[in-house]
Length: 503
Image 1 (cartoon, rainbow, N blue to C red):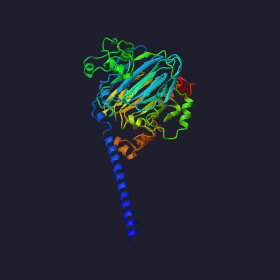
Image 2 (cartoon, rainbow, N blue to C red):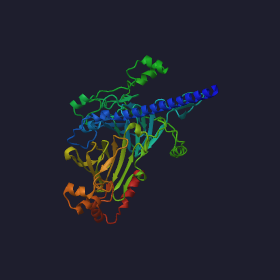
Image 3 (cartoon, one colour):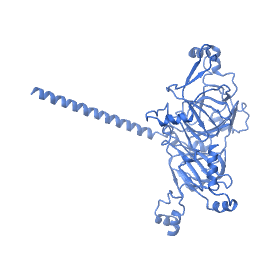
């Protein structure tokens, strides 16, 4: 009797423990889900409070320009109404061959597009291991033996790459190519990751950068111009080491005072992009990188080893392609998981001559569109069906299209049109108004007949006259192009597109 009672008691206690453990697991899982939902609710709390009473949009070029020893940095007016609406800032860098953009970190996550050239990216992530080694020649550090320099991963990038760069990590860029490197970046100052305000701030670890942290009040009170002479219109800035006590720095790094003084860069007037003649860093070749990814075991995708770039210039990566119109390539958090953390995405568009991108709106994101090549016409319609922009856009300009505003893009008849569009959602969704995937195509004919007071035949034409999806070939361009270039077939546009992507 006693053994039976003991067994029953043990069974009861085990069942109770299992039930309690299951309840704890369920409660813990529920708590995690509640926490996730809470985070999602708070996701864009700063952006939701931005002022978006936009009456007129403009295609803008940078309004601030700062020259350095080996390049130039340009900023768009971050206090412009359309940039404030989107809660973003934008910067463009030109880095000469052998130019080094000094180590720095930003207060906002950013997407960077490589317009031209190639280079090296250093992204120093806190807590990650120093997995790269560079052996220095004898005598440079130690006379009797060689010295191995250990550092975090160095990444190669090239024209057409989109780089996803989290806020708060140390970044440096080096141009190891033969031509000038040009990049344009969008910084999401409205992100919840930025807990300061909507002002873009960067913090340099070296050098003596100038100008870009001017206060909003002074910026508004005095219009800036790219013609302003460098050094006269802006106060000089210092790096983060400059205010610290020299003796304390020497003690912290266990170096002499002269080296500590160099950290402060008090006598360095080269700017934030300097010429780096001695630069010998070894990094894996493309074939080695491909081989490493091929043998990945599926457990390597941590922040330390996360993929940070994806090329959008390769025609083979196109998500939408029309041989008579062009192509659209996108990168989102499905293709580049780190974007799930940044909450940003991008779209590269290429329109051949006279081609049109169907009118559409962004369902869940603002869009900052930078023209990388060519020119064209944009029309944007805002709230209450009012036109907020109708004009030409050209290479080097940026225009903000707020969420839900409808936009049409048409390429010029001479150059075509290319752009990179940065979007404030890691999985941005668009809703077209024309074409095979449009809102009108998805409606019953009766709805269109009564909504527009048209016949059934006209409603049918509205729905089915265009079988193309997002990129539409111009009906007028088909006739004019054949007459002007009778021996030039349409595939030549695609061939030129491929050649440009390889340059």
